[in-house]
Image 1 (spheres, rainbow, N blue to C red):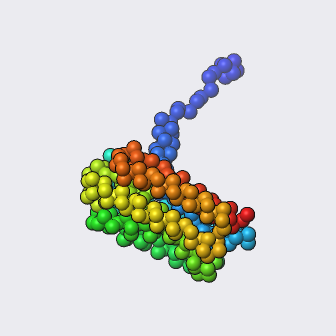
Image 2 (spheres, helix red, strand yellow; image 1 turned 30 degrees about the horizontal axis):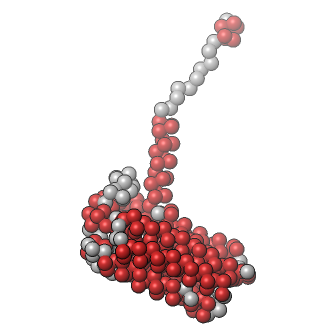
Length: 313
């Protein structure tokens, strides 16, 4: 009896086949909720929020306040993106580049996305209001959220001017950062940052719209490259707004935010951006439009980085 007890195989609990599957489903749902927040766009927005805060605060920057500002603004941005996808779920389902998003693919339900976006946006606003000393930061974030969700998103199917309207909430993140540091004090500096971002977005998004014009047309979006089949007006708009951007990039020098080194760098990067736009005017192709997009992605961090160097050098 004792030998039998010693040599008997121990009882092993049967494997639960639902365990690994449940884990995979949880990871998948987390990935879908994360996709609703458009993390790459959120990161770019938070980069400009941080720039706005540091430009306003200077060497006296409070890193804890900056962190609270980034968290609150990030929640607001994530909520706006989720509600944007909720409102555009049918449009996304008709476009190849977005058909696999969580809502059109059916991996998440509409009410889930709506409540998720509303919760994040509200939480971000309350977070800013409670933990950032300047209430104007929360007000600027709320205005950005409402303009993006309630004005820009519906206009995308109604008018080609939606790009101009959308450039406003897209240019407000550095204003949120500025307000968190100084409130409305020195508003001309906040306006300089806003203007650079506002103008930068137009050639940037026109390049994207040209590359995906067929897909956008399937989705029913009203973008300039769709109604401008030849691309002449698209190219002209790129060139004019890039010229305006170069001029606007001089405003920080005029108001004492930067000096000669910034001026030379900003003009140089602006001319490179302009060169790509002129190339597109001559050869209106997807390949050249992509080069405009790449130039835009080089321009913004370079110019904002030069501004930071000028502030802290």
